[in-house]
Amino acid sequence: MTNPSLLILPGDGIGPEVMTEVRKIIDWFAAKRGVTFDVSEDLVGGCAYDKHGTPLHDDTMARAQEVDAVLLGAVGGPKYDSLDFSVKPERGLLRLRKEMDLFSNLRPAQCFDALADFSSLKKDVVAGLDIMIVRELTSGVYFGEPRGIFEEGNERVGINTQRYTESEIDRVARSAFELAMKRDKRLCSMEKANVMESGILWREVVTEVGKDYPEVELSHMYADAGAMQLTRWPKQFDVIVTDNLFGDLLSDLAAMLTGSLGMLPSASLGAPMDNGRPKALYEPVHGSAPDIAGTGQANPCACILSFAMALRYSFDMGEEASRVERAVEKVLADGIRTGDLLNEEGATPATTTQMGDAVVAALDASL
Ligand code: NAD
Image 1: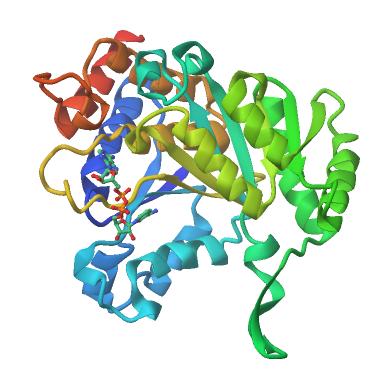
Image 2 (image 1 turned 180 degrees about the vertical axis):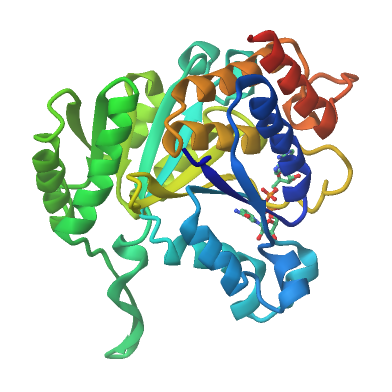
């Protein structure tokens, strides 16, 4: 049997720094668990522009289409701010998302007990929180036509169109049901069926798809009520599926329930490939953090947890994914933290390397 293949794109700024720590975890799996990945590495973003004059070379794009999963660090930085829009580092990431047709964006909101104090909500509301927001990523009001700013009479009018086809709703709903099957088997679909026709269609299609997943308990909620419930008692949810616009807002809201940007992983999934695995790109939610790049202060956990998502959703290694998540949790509980996770005066922050080494040590302890 061939090894699962992984394309690593560290990118710019702190991207390569946090990815070095992920490499340690990958090496640990090979040495201690006999789980070997066929890993290749390439450029994306500003560093790709420096070498090739484009933020994503065609060969890298082709490789991304072939592998089982792509793991990306971060792109961008002040050095590239004055570049033409067409070759800005972010265009490399957007090209990957577009050409891989990654329509299902997974943003977990998981609160490690040790970090419950970092939330803006009360500790008992967020401690142990573990929910997943699935956001439709390639359609809806950000893409619908007509769009633009037009003259109408003696004033201007700004227009965007919320548009969803049945098949677009069907495929993202299926990906959310599949996820729910791997979790607590509860799915809440959020839209505004009370005021939007696209919401009525969304609800109908999700309900129809639900017939193929009788084990999953499906509920529906208006998105505004959903936002309220997410801040009131987020633990009532397991998986939430919603459209591009509502998902943009709700996933940011849910993510911030849990504390630092340095802890947030994400996945973007597309259609299944010939081997049955979805096309997939995993990346931390944070950017290239130019303010701390090169100083050894970056928290590698978001990238390490993105790799854990790859283990779970691309490689069907849910137990190994949990092992990584538990290792991160143990490190935090032991009080080892990078500066972004410290709020006590005088506490000494761990470096990026120390944090990664501590996760590896916690993995060792898990055997
Ligand atoms: P950012 O996420 O890079 O940084 C925001 C703040 O959070 C900074 O103070 C940073 O030091 C801190 N931070 C972020 N990640 C951290 C980590 N792992 N550990 C510790 N602290 C961390 O966002 P920004 O400053 O708005 O953007 C910087 C650059 O990154 C820009 O060029 C932007 O375009 C790019 N960006 C890229 C992505 C991506 O690659 N997906 C996402 C957002 C921003």
